[in-house]
Each structure stands twice: as C-alpha cells, then as structure tokens.
Image: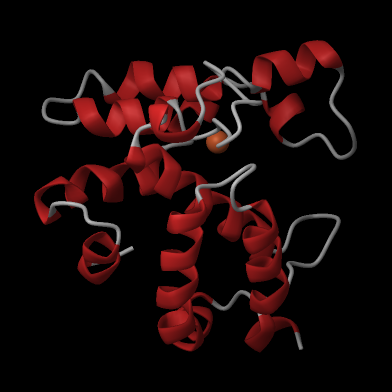
Length: 171
Ligand SMILES: [Fe+2]
C-alpha cells in the first residue's frame, strides 16, 4: 500500500517504511517451522497447528534484532490477530491491534487468496475482494479493507501482469 493509501487511512507517511518491511517480512519466522509442517498437504494436527501459529513470534524475534525495525517487528508479531479478537498470538481486537498489523493482515490474506497453491488455483481478484469485504469488521478492519480495495482497483491489472498470478495467468 503506497503513500496514497496511507493518506486515506490518515497515517503519517513517515511510518510507511515500517509497514512496507512488515508486509514483506512478516512470515520470515516460518524459517523456524519444519518443512514437514510448512509443506504438508491436508489438515495440520493440533500440535502442528500450535507450532505453525508460533511463526509471528519467530518473525518478531528475528526482526527486532535489526536496528530500526522495532515497529516492523511488532507489526509482524500481530499480523494474525483478528479484528474481533478471535485469533493469535495475543487475541487483541479492534484498534488495540497496531494499524501496521491490520494493514499487513489484509495484504497477506489477499495475497494468499490469489496465489496458486499445490492443490488449488488462486481465486480471481473479484472473489478475493469479496472475501475481504465479507471479513470487514470481523476478521479485518473495514477501513483498511475499503482503502485496499480502492487502491487495488486502480492497480490490479498492472500487478497481475507483473507477477504472473491471478486471472491473466490462469484463464
Ligand atoms: Fe503469517
């Protein structure tokens, strides 16, 4: 999300760098999760899920060691919180969740939905947006979703063409 998105959400542009870093590196802690879990096709067991759900804490413990990335490390730590307080690691809800984490959460969910995986084809942009809008107020911050959708509408064709994922690649 670029400068225009930050302005629409009323964020100072000076904090953008930390959000960009968190958007890129929030899952870096998966490096500590065994491949057998990361690449498992099918459902994880409870204990595997428990290990997997530690990855935001691993990301935090790595990013916090890098000078100047303290904020980004906190955004990564809370990128799997849900707006209604139902997720991990802290069960934070609403505006208790740092805005950077709320933004990364939406970006991450969109990316996961449109990506092709081993066992399924990625959703179209329109389907992914529909899921984001449905999750506004429960899983996601509605204001963040609205801003993301506005920006994505302007940029989606360019992004899909550049990355080779999504409708242009799978149709
Ligand atoms: Fe994650």
